[in-house]
Length: 348
Figure 1 (cartoon, helix red, strand yellow):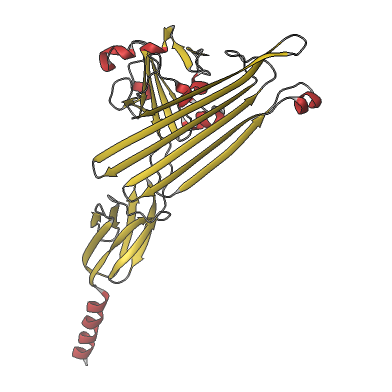
Figure 2 (figure 1 turned 90 degrees about the vertical axis):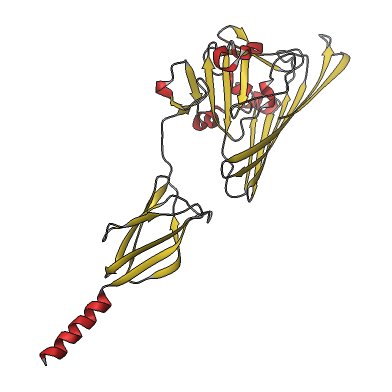
């Protein structure tokens, strides 16, 4: 009888403690994109592994009743799951988390530094500040900064000065690459919409030692948002009028702005289009040209390709402006009408 009891005891022990293997894929809970380099640890045995570039993993432990696995990644929330037996082909969903980190600046030294450690006077305009400013172009945004003054040229282009130096001596970068298409030896920032801009780094002072003679007055680096994993469509409309009383507001012309953006990711290729249309109507002269109506159109198209450590980027910018106005006598009689059209296009 004793021998039978002993045999039964060892039989249950063999069933309770067996080799367990768990394998599968770690994916983003929203996009379904595989997540590489996820730390995977069995809390019971202390054994662990990491997911590969395709998000796949395989973890085996010998002679164990169950596994308590924790999945960790710096950009995702912690995932915990218990396995009492082997399981293969499972999918582990992880939810992305937003981390508030210190600004990293690359403009002033061409290498990544925390903003507080940068040895050159540098200012960073973040996404939140850009959205709250209401600016539709980079020129409008910079006009709100200390030490930067903007004006409009006779051809409708934006002229800005930084620390007393003209924009001819200020280098304009987009994603760390020089912006081409200079007019009158200047880059017109009225052409650059604030759509999809992640941040703007402003380095004030000479940067010729790093970037050459084009940066004698400073450097402005426009950093755009990373391509999104899913298709997206953004559309907004804003209108404004002026006046001290409801009657004046009602009778004044309405100035309107329409902004839209489309992002289409297809495997390793991402196509992004941003459009900003501004319509200004005013019964008096504008500050730089005699006009009763101004229409501006900004169209930015970006095509990017990424695979592993390789990347290619093509950008096209179009800027169009039409001014219509009339010269009148004090009696209101129209002497003559004028119309001006400006069209600019550049490919980077």
